[in-house]
Amino acid sequence: MAINSRGYRPGYVHQDGFFAAIPLVLEEVPDLVFVCPGLAGGQAEEWIAQHKIEQNVILLPSLPQDELWALNKKCMLFISPSSHDGTPNTLIESMACGCFPVAGEIESIREWIKPGKNGLLVDPRDPRALADAILQAARSPELRTQAIEINQNLVHEKAAQEITWPRIKAFYDALINEHRS
Image (spheres, one colour):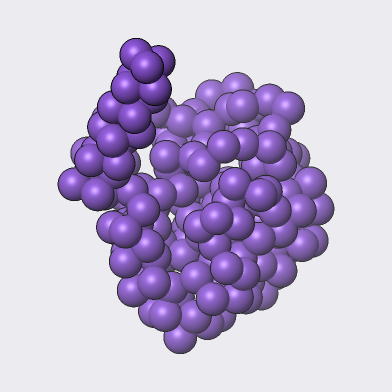
């Protein structure tokens, strides 16, 4: 299973390209299922009908955090078709849950993903490139296994509360002390 929990964010999350990539993936991996929390209703249903991918896509409403994490743990891939973004929480959460990330080629994401090592980066506006990255990840259990360990360590080192909170406090303490001087 693959998960795309980016929801509707017109202008920078290219769900149209994501749904256009799915039939290209299914030509070679016909049993892959795409689960899409936060995309139930609206335009996604039209894209599914347009691309005739009803059997392989599950649209869900937005989920409570614990349910989203549980779903991430069942998926092998996380798809984030964005072209402009900060570091999405959904990316970090999926990496922590063991999903292999396929994400848009964005500078902020390069801070987390080394292409071919712990994820893949693509132009999310290019359905063929997105499909090729999904296929590469789906076909390579070795790459996915390697990425799980790297990503879980990376998330712990860069995003765990016990690591980040002291850094944040020190930053603000220094800022406050600087303005008092």
